[in-house]
Length: 212
Image (cartoon, rainbow, N blue to C red):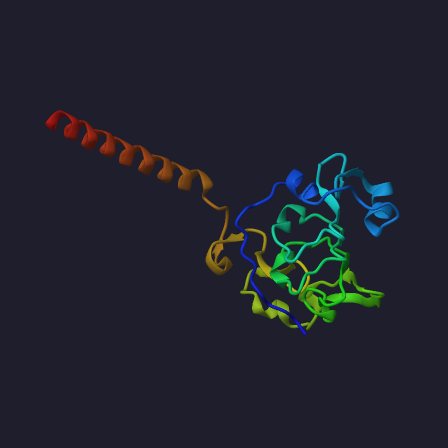
């Protein structure tokens, strides 16, 4: 059964805040720790990629979390551990954009985001649920790509999610416009409009000041 509950975030954490939102560091001999031995370095509860500073792994196990929010800064993560937390429900939308996520460890009460169909393997071990091998949502039904308009392609966008991306040389609403996007022209129009509005406001304010 899929749980679709929207979680609203009041405070958007940065990478550093997320890595240190829970005391301690990545647990020794945990799945994230083992992964990080060859993929990056440990920083707080994160496995961080040395070159690009991306969060590749996140260990928030046993952090007394009752809800999950603000994980988007770790959208490049390959492995995330949320086990041993009193989380009662979690929105699938939390993992939108997590295209690289291939190993997710959850409390046993939670379902894998996107349902079992979104994963190659779902296992239950002790009090945890393991979601392994994220599947391409565009290939789940064989017809999902038909939902995208002409001149666009279906692209994965996290477990159970997909998005339509305009094909090469197409842009605009429903990818109906062909050719290069007129970036310079658009910027020139916006810039000119901004200057005109600023001048009008300045003149108006000057007249008010003189009138008083």
